[in-house]
Image (cartoon, rainbow, N blue to C red; front, side, top):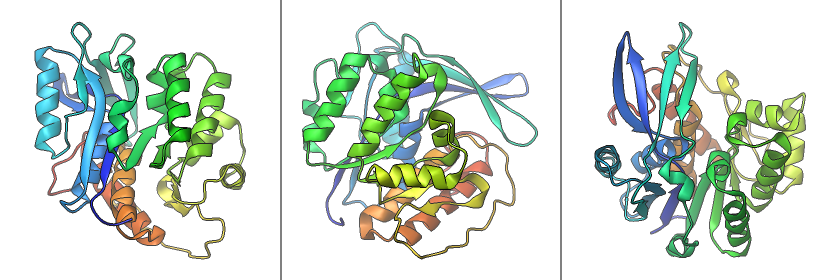
Length: 297
């Protein structure tokens, strides 16, 4: 899959407030945006990475666009909504580096994504999105997006980033995520998210369901255990060194995705890609914030 590929990362970018004591540090992040940035860092220049979203016409939106462009991610397919604003979230991090979030995103501009249809996606070779992307879309547009994916000839990469509060109910989430998995070429699930969504009791239950739905490429993210090859026929057993320091787990999975995809699109070597994703994630959780300096990750 090497060569000149155009990759679309689709989703919501938000204003991020991370508190250092009583002082908020303002930045910009979002699951698919985080992946887009780390993906860009792991690819040679002949690959293009674009973020597809909707922002506002306000000063914060412009700062967000400037931030994304400074990371080398193209913003040509980000639409500016005339009246809506970006979503916002605040991070609280405990002494073990685990984070919790407070969100203000119900009326974010990104929820108007694809109101004009999906023609802008035709130019891309690879489509990357997550369950958060699906969750923020109105039901009719979500169904239209899944129908478009079914008929397209793109490489589809999906991460079922399950956030219960974004969905009206579990049944809706299960239905949409299953539909996405059945269209997926390269899957990047997290075992905890999958078990939470589908009520499974073991890693093997998750693997059996996903491979039964046709997900045979990618990696199952298992936290400190390291990733597992999604190929049911793989006999490779890789060893992944645990992080020496966990400061902030924000974007742990997103950064893994960026490192994995960046490697996998070049040579389809899952073991090498898992190592690339793992190393990127370890670097990220050793620092504060979703996006760490490029020379560190």
